[in-house]
Amino acid sequence: MTKSTALLALVATSFILPPLMLWMASAAILLIGAFSGVGRNLAWRYVVLSLPFTVAVFIFHGAILPRPDMKPALGWLFYSSTGLDHASLVGGRISLILSASLLFVSTTAPATLLRALDAARWPPGLSFLLASPLLLLDQFTARAKAISNAQQARGLRVDGTPWRRLQALRMLLVPLLTSALADAQERSHVLTARGFRALPSRTVVDPPADTLSQRVLRWLLTVLTATGIVVVVLR
Image (cartoon, rainbow, N blue to C red; front, top):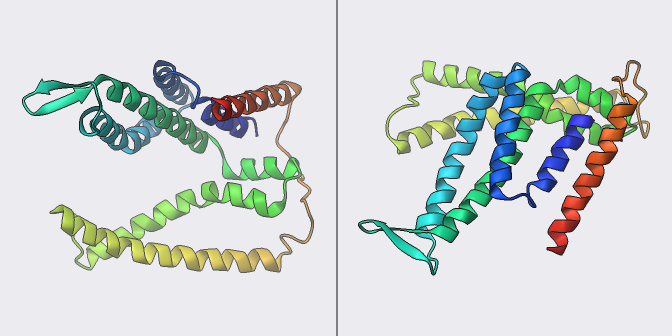
């Protein structure tokens, strides 16, 4: 619960921090991931997900979107200082939210999160809704890899021109989504048969440890989150 509260606080404060603080906070989160033992996977996922978006934001706001302060850079290429500043702000927000989310996903066991939500007396349906993406992430990844290998064994080519790759992506997504929907229906039947929503809350036999310092920290983070939301609304 403490990590999820910290994630919400970071998302809220990302809309009030200046660009430099946003990028520094993202670097600090990646450093925390390195000390947590997930640095390599965290950095790889962060680069793969954030780099294309960051480059696109800087190109669009800094060179494509017309602004009054456009200046020549090289030949026909123009740039805007205010556009680059805005791109740095938007890219920093996405960078902070993405790095914090990836760190949360990489360091949080789904079963522990589900037990923590149940111990906090959350409704079972809402608890499962929040924890299910983490529960299904590894299974979904393994299934996607198995479908890709099976389709390639049948002669599907996943390399070549962008159009060929787009066609291959369609052949991979259709069976993946179909199997995911079938799996979701099966899970729904199993949970219903077990009386998943028979009671408003569930009792946890071995709830995660929750110290006084963690509770105080959650309250402080909650206040920080509320402050960030108020500042954004009133700005």
